[in-house]
Length: 182
Image (cartoon, rainbow, N blue to C red):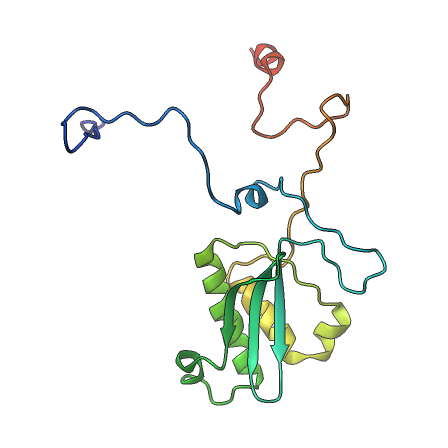
């Protein structure tokens, strides 16, 4: 037997009347189209050595004094970063440049990415680079274990509205499909 149902009713503080949700909702999140995979990805020039086809790019830098990494938006601004220059991270490390530092920077950055709502980022490292560098390999493993996917999904390419090959969006339900399902 189920327990009694609890009904919560929102009330306006000043009048005491039941609050009515607005009929039109405008999402002002600037990353909304990226999360729905509808935003355009810049492609850049085909002859460029570095691909620009991303929304968020993960950059890793291991110098001879510090280890740092940050996630950069396609506009060039840094969204999330972690580095051994930060005293709170440096305090717990023996060295700022060894493999342990790279792994811990990866853990901290993965956690900050998830807190910022970034679950997928673009990371362009070749297999050869991963085999050559232990620091890079442990950093990548820490990011993946932290719950961040290192490959962004492809953008949904929109066909013109008159095209017969136009894909149906996952949130659109046609009346014909509902009738056929019955």
